[in-house]
Length: 356
Image (tube, rainbow, N blue to C red; front, side):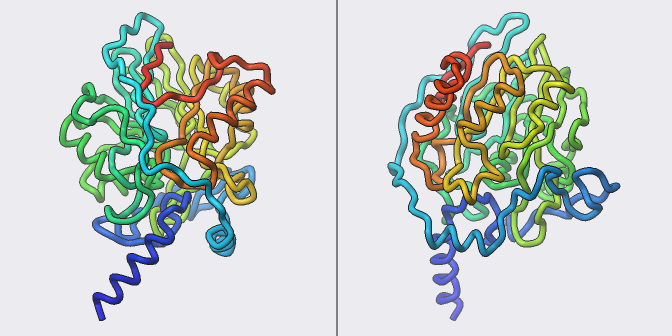
């Protein structure tokens, strides 16, 4: 009987494994068992009702009915089993005063070197973005930096708790090696403490903190959070503005389009560099509220007043229905329509170190 139950569970997880909802499906395994932590307890605000967080611009999470409709009707473009296109990182790139270097490791993981500090965003070196090691979306492109080749990591920025952004296994490896300071949204500190990783700095939207010489502001995003059945929107999602070495860098995390990019510019200043998601956007009827497409990312770039933007959140795991390189093609078309050059807004190249 137990064997039959396990086989049925594996078949179900394999069928559900390609979901882009990053934890919205109830799957169980290892120490991630339906766990999002205790969530956040605090005063009511314009994005917290006293129990859960919400988007002031409208809901982003689709219903279970919508999820099943998508799963039964989807027609995803086939991806290769293994993607290439990795460049050799220039981790020793010379960054002068008032400069920074960024390297796209994969998906939303960047190594940012600025102000004498090494920062990782949403670090994931695991093979799958899943609560289990044997099911769920599997990498088609390996991390562009071998973990053992990383420089000393000082700070980790966690945008939210979906499995393709918050990976417990990777965070534990980082903690064991360097004990970096983790900065994240409200409610995630308790979750990390429950995994044996205390001391995270958790921020509300627009809250700013000095972290090891960096100025870090947590900014709004149009998204949601969950890691299982008991923590829907119990923790806060968002992006980051980092200020150091005379530079201002914006990491958007995971977001749909909403009218806050201009507000980020007004409150934090126009970024020298914006790291914006351009993937996981098809079909639009299902994904539009939670993931920008390249055309919307170009619009966000303009509203931010960014001097330069790089696209991310594509070409690593097949989470949605567009082709592996379609975000790059669609970004080129959107950029041309807006009269932008590739130097103004190009897709991040895996492994390429860009000095700004």
